[in-house]
Image 1 (cartoon, rainbow over the protein chains, first blue to last red):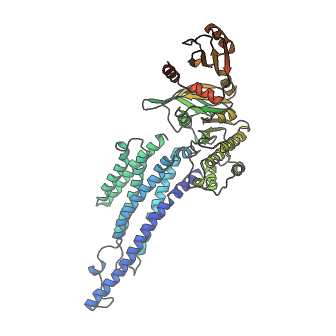
Image 2: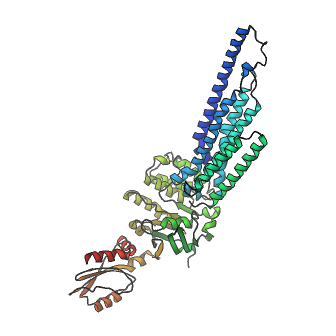
Image 3: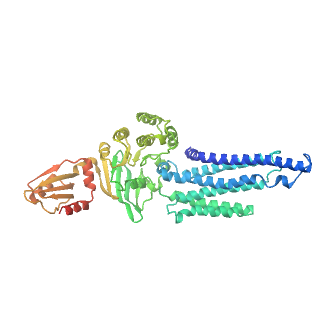
Length: 235
Length: 307
């Protein structure tokens, strides 16, 4: 009950940003998928008019399918996911510092770990629902027969999820920097720098196994550091 | 002897090399209404945050309801109400939503009726958003939130700061309502002496992080006093008297601020110093507090300038 109250609070505070990110991704995704579908039809009509072929005679023509259509949306997600992670980190850890509400929040009849757990759960849930669900839904929608000339490759779905995981890395990096009491030009910036470095290393990997391993490692390091900082920090 | 609800032993906090609180030894018995006094920056908020485990002491310890402040369990926190300095609440919530949030942490002891009564008493509505409330109204909501779980110990950090006189009075009356219930212990910091005088039965004075007084209010009222000695000739240049806080000298007068000095001792000293007569000057709590916490060197500087 206590944890749920905290979780509800965190989700409610994050809601505007979650909605904004989710709707932005959905909007860009639907616009891209539908405009691509329209262009594909136009290209087909143009091609068939010049070749004098009718429907059913054009199969697997590279000119009609070109690049995967969701790749453009995934590029947007590459900015939206870390951006959302950053904003959620600010909402959960910076805003209480500025609003000076930490004292009110920490004097709850619950452990500090529960308070932190509610924040992390809200961030993970938020990323999963507002971006993960929307992204997977978009992929499913784009793969429906008859919409695009060929189904989207599953790799593009995985790439999108990698960006969402990077969103979590950005969140934890922001949290760690916010919880630090050092100066900005010294160790306080380390959380964000580490998150940026981890994101870069994850993105340059070709092998999915390495991506997974690096993501798990980065999240584990940031999580342990964030927990340690939160439990020992003075507010 | 009454059970000790709050106790600090050598509680010390340093920020860098600067002591914010220096060896605070304090004992607050159950049922006591304790006014925690000090000037701005004296260390009141630091002491309160240390007591509630929001800060870690550099040395010493604080115990609340028998539990060390650095390891306050959820069960102990449930028995402590806390009104934060500046009444910082979650601004986006309505009063009703905030009550719901707060109630989740006190499932068995939350008194919905008391909360509703207080909100009504303060002429507020549960549908009002915190961000639309004035400072005074936020203070009232803070008090209602802290009192509704019927805490055994209520800690308030400058609860009347920034409130106008009318709201302050209303706030204090709400607090007195709580005080009349048996067994409640209250520690509240303030620098508005009239508030303390109206409510507290014990006062603790800290000055620059150091404990200066911890006694019943009445004892403080009778201990700190000012006496003016009149001389036929010039007044003595120096004063040697145990319990002397400050003295101010004019040509034929000496004004002494004393602590814990009885009438007989004053009379003896006045006779020895050759005073023609002496008068005790009436002081209110605010005057006493200012005199009590004024740094002695300020008076020396003043004398030097006069000379």
